[in-house]
Length: 424
Image (tube, rainbow, N blue to C red; front, top):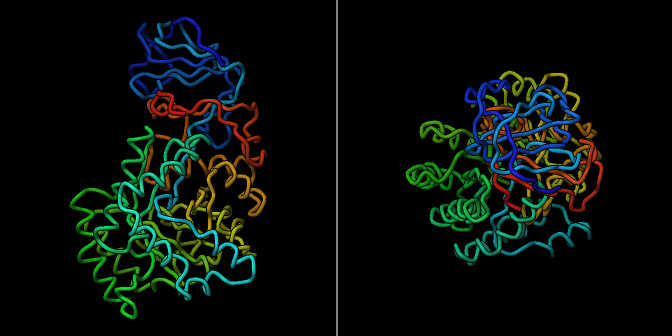
């Protein structure tokens, strides 16, 4: 891929059509690319495509033959490379202190996730390391993880709290998440996950901790505008459906959308509960039953598949993929990047795992990491390449969309752009 002298391209003031009525300057123009717009139901691959942007938005996305003349401040020749929307990682826990490599070794020796958690490991061990790190320490530890996702083509990432489990620490985690976005020039969506585990200060008093989340942590987060959504871990080793409901009711009062870690280890009706509250997404879902699938289909809640955790925990029960397909539930794919059960630094590898372990098609995996992942974050301005949307895109060192889920690891992203700006 190389730059050539500034050329011509017409402006699209309407931004709702690919027709360009007048001569104007554009910030950038990408030529000679195989453009996977994902604007319809498939890859929507344009063999000889062109992409133009201005003021961070796409002004043209279509066949190069349809591109009239106009001025462009920057012209880029992609040399026939594949171009897709920027990837969206819609479920991560990438802000945390320390690591849990020893616990991973324990699982390989036969210990279960629940046994490790009940022995003081799991989320509780990360809580201790996170509280000790401080805000600057958390930023220093977390930036390399975010950079790894960026280098792999991620232009929007969701980052959850949930490892401090006290008011000050949870807010600090969310502030660090926002700092990561500013530091790297990528889009970050923040999610408050204070109802992730029971901190030691509330041992044996789960309902009192839920009161604390409702009455202290949630209002403080809302006052500072630090969270774009609220999440909870609804599971027998975490919080019951009744406790989760109380968190969601308070989130609704504060005008915050919800998401849910649902049905990962058992079917407690988490998917149906999420759907009842119109959740943006329900995530994990290995044990979701038919009632949960139907409820999600009716509410439009996105199913976020997390094959990294499934792989790391050596689970054997996959989510009900056929049920989701039959019911028309959109399926997103995310890394679930976290220290304990999915230390996964590549969304492309998550796509590969979703195909290999859950039998998604490569097309489903790519749409799951773009179109449906954006929807799982409540975002309608990205995930596709179409006029008027954000100019978030990736130029890949491959030619076919299916290759993104085919190659197991390795650097494939040649150039990553956020709102037209190169960020990698």
